[in-house]
Image (cartoon, rainbow, N blue to C red; front, side, top):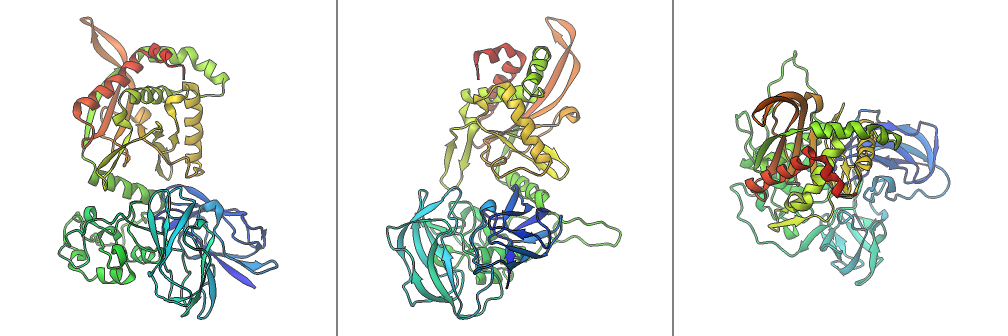
Length: 525
């Protein structure tokens, strides 16, 4: 007997991934939870593990191929015992059923991931009973987590055969909630749907001109986790149809977006393309004419993530950029004096660790630089940790690995960690932890630094520090023209929460550290 191993969900909103490499070969025997392939998503490189022991009969896809969530990526032959689907732990995937149940087939429905970092939930109430007929997207159960009460829906049409928990029970993610019997044959893998926040309910917004097209900023179908309220099957359909769910008004319970909402959205006036060079918000993008001489390359993987995130940042955040020049002669002398000592500690000491340290210490004085904006709640979220993202150029595009607790680390520790993180990013080995929880970003063009740039903020952060090249330049000191090692910086701020004078004062504080590096000695860590 054989079973098909399908691409699991790898994270919130991730609909596809690019195969980096297979860690197994056809004919190999694999054990349950053994890593079988690496996949590059728009967030990180993730290893996916086998959900069941078996022998690899077929690998579907080669390095560089894009694979959608739910598509078959390998076929295994069974090695003893019944084949049971379960989540692939190494990929933090949603629990899925590996083979679509035929009519009359029973299958177990596990508690899906309910949000970032949520590992369990308390059953509040069941909305169904044993023997009830189910329809796809019908609410099944309300679950209380440490973040919110969420409602979980049915992934299929069927019948409830058994409920495995009752009100008050604490259920871990991946554990069985209920047993269903499929009432019809299915043509695709059944996904355990993401849960959707149902309380507190938001005020009903005004509906846009199209019956189911809305302004994303006022769309009640957007959950507290920042994603549209829709099951993975609906999100996959929208992805295939090229529809941004943030523009779709859901007709289901609590404005959940259903399959019919997506299918009917294509016929609404708001989605009709207009002959403009740049589509306005809410409009479908316009396809450019094709010629045989042109070369077209798909926007996918990391480039797609950059494409999406930069667009979002510029659409949401009103940027202002403050430019300053910094005299680096004393810093150059300090680095020269301790570079060999740092090498003995295994650190390659560039100027970037000093800049990161100066920024992290300055953030202590200006905590508004270490916040995110919760647009839905209209609140400013001050972060406890100072985690500095380091924009890193790779052959596949820009990545931003994050140094955690940068203010608590020495310059040598920062140098080591920055080098390690950058190395993994360039080798496409970054883990989700490497790329998560950043609160402030540094972007450096190094020797290509030029005179001035206007960096784009890494949303939802509120500032980004751009570093330019250091050059010998003629400057005036005490009425005399002298040569100094000067470095330009361009710092962009979110003007919604950072006022101009505050941004300038913050930059001057960083400048003070870099021009007077002895000030670092006041901070032993």
